[in-house]
Structures are given as C-alpha cells and as structure tokens.
Image (cartoon, rainbow, N blue to C red; front, top):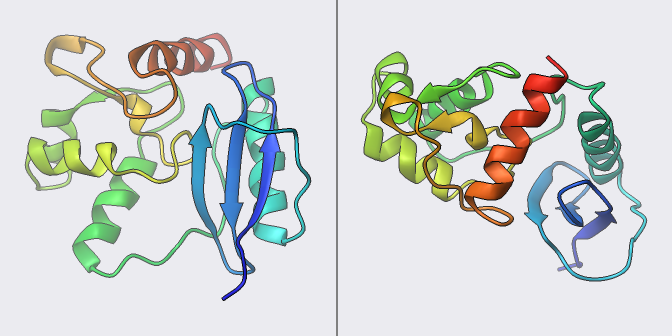
Length: 154
C-alpha cells in the first residue's frame, strides 16, 4: 500500500492538512503540524485550492470527490449535512427531523467527521442557537470563527 498524498496549507485558523489518494479526499486535519507541503494527486490539489478559496471568502460550496460510505443511511445523513448551506445553521434536533433521524445520530456524524469544513458540521448548533461542541481544530473557538467567517462573506 502506498502512502496517502497530502498537502499542508496555511489558513486563518492555523495549518490544515488534506489527505487523499487518486480517487478522493479522505481526511482534513485542522491544526496539523509540519511545513507547508505540496500535493500530487488531483483530489488533494483540488481540496487544497478549494479550502484556500473558502478561507478567502470566494467559495461557498465544495465540489470534491469524497470517499464512498458503506451504508445508504450514512450517505443520506452526510448528504443532508452537506446540503446545509453556507452561512446557514441548524440545531442537531432540527437537522435530525429534516433527515428523519435522531439528534444523537447527527451528533455522532459530526463528531466522527473526517472532513471538517468540507463536510460542514460547524453549521450544526445546539438547541436554542447555542454554539455546541466541535471536534476539530480548537473546538468551539474554531466553530465560532467558521460561522462568523461565513456570515461576513455571505
């Protein structure tokens, strides 16, 4: 097995590492360590370019090859989360109702998200508009920054 391709880019929230292969973007790590690194595969290069455009405020929706999920239900939940538009938020319960699921399932989807920012789990809030937790970067501080960024560039 070959090592995954990767890029490490500088962003306003710190370095971000993008990993992938010839077929798809597989992982995004906020707060990664190491020197800025170039990429070689088209999927990783596209992800790095689109993330840079997102942080510049010029990209509102990502168009990247993502890994195939094993279950149809997992795909439906991920697609529902991706459909949550730029600058829009929904509570765990509200998103669960939209997707005919449970809030706990939405919470697990967000907590296990290997592609933060690209799969916008930062747009899912707690009940009553409270920020809630965030499993990437510096946690809720990163989530708040991303939400504020989208409001500024909406």
